[in-house]
Image (cartoon, rainbow, N blue to C red; front, side, top):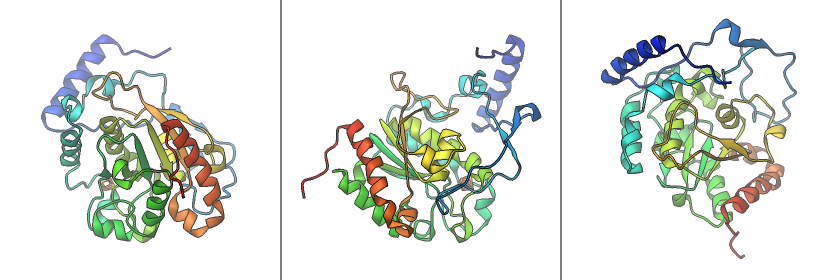
Amino acid sequence: MPRTLDPELRRTLADRIRFYNELGIYDFYRRESAESCVAVAKPEPQPELREEMSPRKSAAVAVPPLAEENIFEVLSPKPEQKIIDPVRALRVIREDLGDCTRCVLHKQGRKQIVFGVGNPKAELMFIGEGPGADEDEQGEPFVGRAGQLLNNMIKAMGITRESVYIANIVKCRPPGNRTPEREECETCSPFLMRQIAVIKPKVVVALGAVAAKTLLAMNSSMAQLRGRFYDFKPAGVRSNDPNWQGCKLAVTYHPAFLLRDPRQKGEAWKDLQMVMKELGLKAPAK
Ligand code: SF4
């Protein structure tokens, strides 16, 4: 049963949130209580080299109160929510992000924020982990060698890069291309959630473990995450379209991982074929 708030507390919170909204503040972060943590018996073996997220700092994992009413979603509409035109709505999110200093990645050598690129009405979104050196240089996700491979994967699906939307969990390059920390992912991903709610895709493909685990809030191995669809709704935001109740999410390997281990390309192709079937796409004749 969803837990609802005491009406008095709800009113007080609503007033406080409205006050912050008027100051231009829309993002709120929930500090987990000690009771919302449970012990994890033992980490699973991680077979895929760097296809897994950095280990948690402790043996405790925060469990989001799924059944609890999301007070911030209910009471704090995002500024883009009233905007029908997705191009304008995405621009509002970008403006809200500003010259972001919300996590430590802003002071670790980033050249620019890599927001996302592609069709604002895309049926298909690809979400990676974070920008690398080429992306940081050019301000666009997936433009290096991994980007070339992603382009080839998209082409093999019978569509173009321009027809999809591509973004990352974190929008600033982690130094030395390290895996983004969980805290960085959790700080940055609300903006991605807002982008997804504006674009309203039919399918999201999470590229690699960091993207999959952040979007799904699951801590399983790639082997367990791949090979099926998940029902996905971006957390903490509401789409401006009441008919859009979320989308399907599939998990596949990150192209950078496939460059290191090309033997897995066949497995990734199986994942993409599942997505093609869902979207009614046909591979182009050779
Ligand atoms: S990674 Fe995201 S949250 Fe962190 S500084 Fe960059 S834009 Fe801001």
